[in-house]
Picture 1 (cartoon, rainbow, N blue to C red):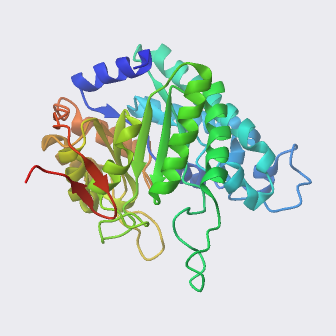
Picture 2 (tube, rainbow, N blue to C red; picture 1 turned 90 degrees about the vertical axis):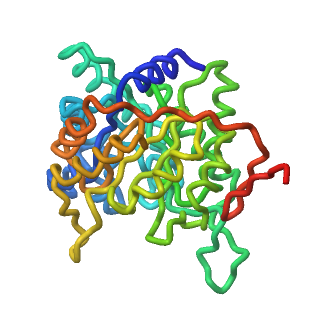
Length: 352
C-alpha cells in the first residue's frame, strides 16, 4: 500500500471524505466561445473545437484551475482532473489524438496547483484524482445491430490509450487514478491492466478508485452487470474505493450503493447527479435537496466518500459536506474469502 493510500484510508476512518462536483457544469456556466476553445495555439485547427472541454486545460488554464479551487474551498478533499476525454480514442473526434499525453500532464498540474493553494489556506491535505473516463467506445457490445460480433475497439487498443493517459496523469502529479463512469466492465479491465503495467514499470503504486454507472432504472450497467457482479469483476484490482457516479440522482442511486456497501471490503464512493434531467436536459435539484439525500447515505452507514456529478456545483458540494459533517463513515465489512464470479449476475460458490 502506498503512503498516499495509507494517508487517505486513515482520514477515511475518521470522517467521510468529500469529492468535487461537475466540471462540465461549471465550464458551461462560463459560456466559452469557439474562439475561447481555440485560443492562439489552435486558431487554425481544421475542425470545430467548442465542446472539447478537456482542451481548455491548454487554452483556458486559469479558468480550469479556478474551478478546481472553488471545489476545494467548498469543502472537497479531492478533485478530479479535467481529463475525462483525454485519451487518444476520445480525442480522435477532434483530430487531437497527439495531445492526449500533454492534456493529462497539464490537467494534473492545474489540479495540483489548486490543491496546494487550498492546503496553504487552511492546512488540510488535498488530493488530486487523475480522471480516466470510459472513452466513447465499448469493448463488449457491438455498435452495429446487424453485426453483433463486431467491435469498434479492441482490448489492446483501450489498454494502450488508458496507459498513455495514466502515465500523463502520474507525470503531472496526480495522487490517485480514478477509473470512472464505467458503462462496460471490459473497458475498466483494460484500464486496470494498463495501470498495473505502469505500476510494475515504475516500481511504485498510487491508489486506484473505480466508479461504475448504472445507466437506467434497470439497475445494471450498459454491459448488463448488477452492482455486485461489477464488484466481483473488479475486486482483483484492490481499489481504494468502488462506487457509482452519473446517470442517476441520489434518490435513484441509493439502492445500488447499498448493494455495493454490503459486498465490498473497501471504501464506498458515491457521486450522483443533481437529480434526473428535466425535459430540457438540465438538472434542477437544489444543493439543499441533494445535501439531504446524500446525508441520508451517511446516516445509514453506506458511504466513505461522497461528491457530485452532472449538474452539481460548488454550492452542492458545500451542502453535501455540511450534511455529512460529524456523521460516522461506513465501516468496511470483513468478507469471508470464497470463490466469487461475475457474469451479468454475481455468483458465489458455497459449501452446500
